[in-house]
Image 1 (cartoon, helix red, strand yellow):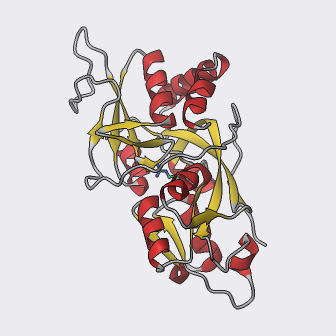
Image 2 (cartoon, protein in one colour; image 1 turned 90 degrees about the horizontal axis):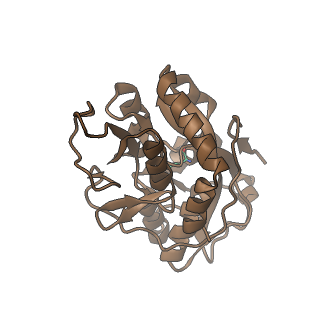
Image 3 (cartoon, rainbow, N blue to C red; image 1 turned 180 degrees about the horizontal axis):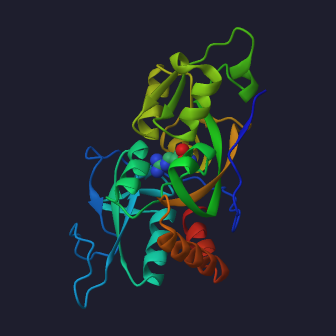
Length: 273
Ligand code: ARG
């Protein structure tokens, strides 16, 4: 059996994940901007006298419990940790929702200041962007129908097996599955909800996605289950434009502080019970 492990960077903490959540509703508009602080959301990041400067976060808000919609607002572990970081920096957080595979480009183009999206640190991504210290860890899980013939991750690699795998475009699940099973056996979707709909409809045999979003998706979609065996272990971190050490240093210092004073653990405990 082939296993993949994303690179382990300096890890501030390892958060284990054990909860079940109702999945977020699918939003038609996948490009909305949500502001966690209810402040003015102008695109101008230059500070106006007497007003806090805006710190823009790029994310993909279909990833409960890390980022998801509650009404018009994007909430979740990442949204709250980012708000706490912005507060430490004396700035106002603005969250910009986009396709997951656009985040790195947006960070490098400067349309957002950083990316935070349950994003896994990988060697390939490190060639394009810089990552903060890790603030959480994740596991790639496999979702199947309750009556599926796939009982174990090894079944996907069995002699003669050719299962169809659904993934979110540009995620590590996509990258690893494409590498393992070939492009023809992997179908990419804009988000996990769409991949799960495809699984229910029978166009794919399983969905590979991070374990906490997997739990939320299974809780919201009866008839599905998560295989007990996992696919890969990963570290989540914040990304900034390559070479933006000024912002990276500030984010790292904030993560260390927020870890030490228990803020991050408190936020995680609120979403993962
Ligand atoms: N951890 C995976 C990755 O980095 C999936 C992240 C997807 N995140 C999201 N907000 N949709 O590739």
